[in-house]
Image (tube, rainbow, N blue to C red; front, side, top):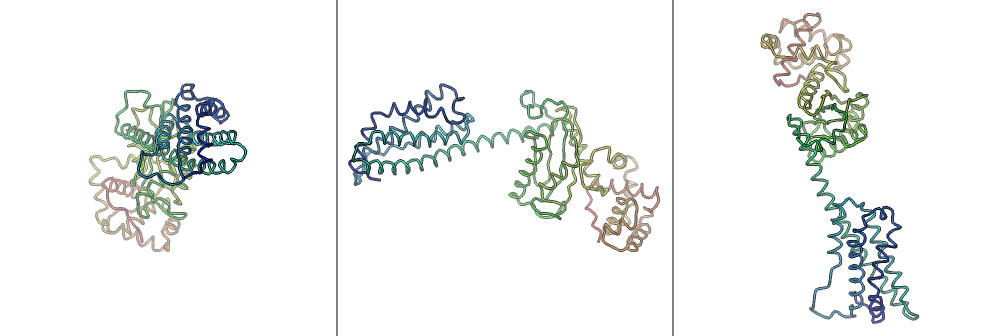
Length: 417
């Protein structure tokens, strides 16, 4: 914006004091900013001082040269934001807090205004007002440019950091342990690692939602992953290594996991679901993470297949079921016992619920929302088709083994009506 001759004269008079004003800021006024005193001396004396000097001189020189009417085509006007953007990106890479960086720019503008006021002569008050307005407009552009450059660099650094952490989790889950001990620092110094496995959970469904419902929009999945990460970080008191996608995820928590049911509730709340099944297995160290992840995944599969209540499951919770689900010489014959009811998911689902409810017909009826006589009729029909009687101890054991082996083969889930 063009300035009056008086404003240009005031700016030109102050230009001679630019170096002194820069030193005053870098080694005087800025020292009172929270966190500034702890910065390295070379950063203050060289980089910050040079940046301040550049900003002060550029503003005053442009103000001194600002005519009332545009002079037509000519040399390009110097852009102070270019250096500010470069320094902002550098400060982000060095870890300077954004609030300290912005405070330094705001304080610099305040000191420059004081310099203008000190050099204002009687009768030049209107010129000071003009330059004050120009300074405020320049500061608006500077703060926007600095913030954008800082955040862009910070986002790039954070993206690279997250990518390295995800790559580390992938390697550990694949059984590849980095040779550099420093790469394992996020696992802490506990030695053992709790490997947590989560199912695919539809995010943002609200109270009353169940696992397996809804779609997995990429944005929703990222939001759910963010909420899960926050809940895990609060539990561990540190940044937890995680790897989440629409199929579920893994989390590597340092040390043994305590109060797992409370963690499961927090994770369910984070996902916005009423209930959440998850499983954990402990690894003795980084080299055991891959095996622990496989065990936890199998425990989770079995716990859900057997109708276990929601919560965090361990191998000890499903020892018998785990053993029954192991393939062996008799697996094919046991699995074939269900062939007669293979096309009746209502019967298979009812039997599964019956076993999960301790073979209580009333509890099963309540779980399925049907009359107890309906449960009896379905169980009788199941027995007629398969020869298995899940109301007896031996029949229940064989039925459970057959269901677990059937699930191992990846059969479609049973949906009782």
